[in-house]
Length: 335
Image 1 (cartoon, rainbow, N blue to C red):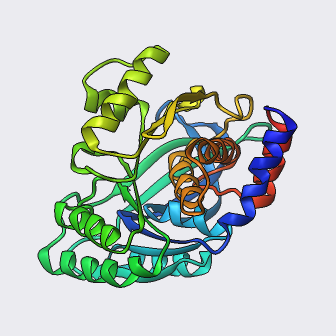
Image 2: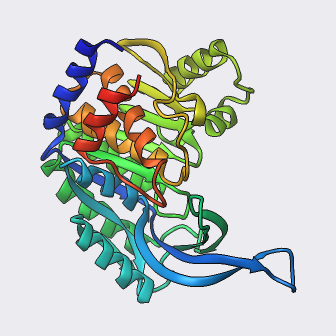
């Protein structure tokens, strides 16, 4: 990339500030238990960890919100927590991160989704995740909770620049919620984007659909390995979903994109050498794409920004974010 092109990307960063994004979906409390590996256990072939620290981060659909805030945007969360200690902890994390949580509904009938990661800290290497314990309920939300979420969407989306759906398949992103997102977005001419781990077919007519390699293969029913394969998949999803743009993240191979006004393009990964933890990288991508498109940045430039941001967060532990300063540095120093 030429210095002129890099300067153009950096010039877009101030436009991300103050963009208002409503993020709706399955919010989690991510818990990290970190210990120092001292020896192997005599009971099983596993390391023994001496406890060092425990910390919490907003996870699931709350992670795109954290990324929006880190880049200077305004994030308003719509989701569900349980009436439990984890729910209170998550609400506190949202507030401390600077995320507006007025759209988060408390549902006493279900637990707050919690993902506990056990992490080993070695003396000379980056922390390694050993195991993850998930506490969740995948049952669909009840009608009363659904109506409360839709009421929040009706209030918040007209005040925003975009609405982002983050579907982690734990029951919050119901058909009625999806329909409400599209309805209010269209009535108020707001950008609507989606990142789903579930059935992409229920997200018809969104402005941008983002999925990963495995999800693209699942919905198209075809193994994707060559650039021709990914081009075909992008074209197929664009047509079948009635989207304006499709982005397929490809892990260490970067990402592919196509739009109704953008030819197919493949962006190699911006950072290949320092990948320590890929947790939440996809959330970073959809957050940056949504912020940039809401700011009037073209799809290709938005994808470049998202690609650089993903390269930054995989160098950090846990659900990480990138700041404008870090993003400017990456654009200047990476190819």
